[in-house]
Image (tube, rainbow, N blue to C red; front, side):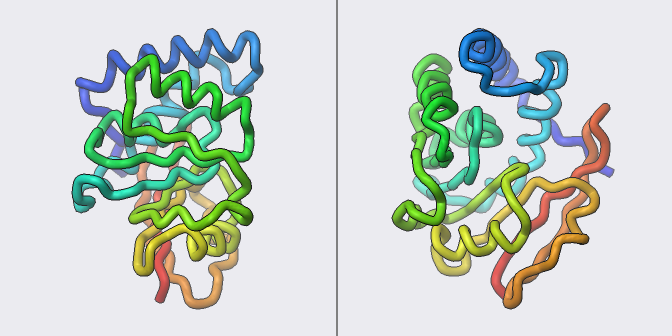
Length: 193
């Protein structure tokens, strides 16, 4: 089972991202994830999505639904500065951090979008991603609203993803991978049948 790889040129900006997260977390309590687990859980895990960006043309819109502190959006935006990354979340506090990270790193192609997925106007995205956000049924419903027709959606899930019911009219294709200490994971590619 493959281990995700982060491009070496991203190590320095991602280390700055983790430093910024640590500083903000002391004041704003953004995450309960211990500092020593953040590289693997927030960044290396996001790297599992990088191969799926290869077919996207410059200017394509990628929506990270439920971005939280910007994972996986920050990794994807740094890896592909020619794409438009939309980090979507309902939490103003978390998006304030994402906005600051975009300024400081800098990641000018990362755009925070605040709002509830069921209330925002369509994001018209060419690719959707999410980590630990909801069930496959919820994700498909949100993606039906925010994705362009035929656009794929990638969900970062645990190994028991297949216990979740698949919404009618959708196909799920699993792509397993592993993290060094956090175990098996799966990129579930969702698309309409």
